[in-house]
Image 1 (cartoon, rainbow, N blue to C red):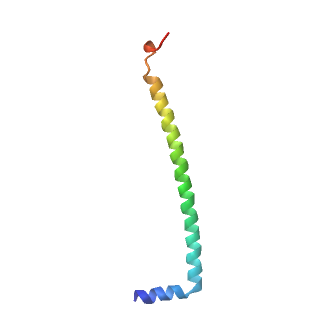
Image 2: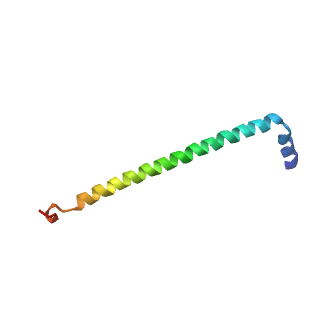
Image 3: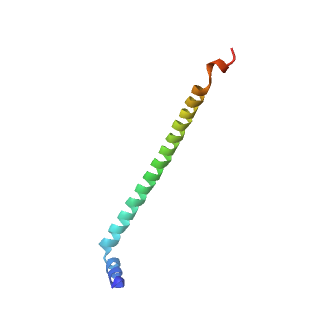
Amino acid sequence: MAKALIGHLAGDPRTTARLASDNRRLRARVTELETLVLRLQAENDQLEARLQGARTAAALDPEMLPA
């Protein structure tokens, strides 16, 4: 029965065109999401570096600094 269903789906050109269109749309969306993930990772790295710098500056004791 599965072979009959697959054969039936492959025979309708509208279904094939719709699937191809959906495939293109989904691939474009995946690309958008991958770009977003890379941007957010870079932003997170920058924020983490700034936080680490602030922690380092706060950890320095003013009395230990040279006059």
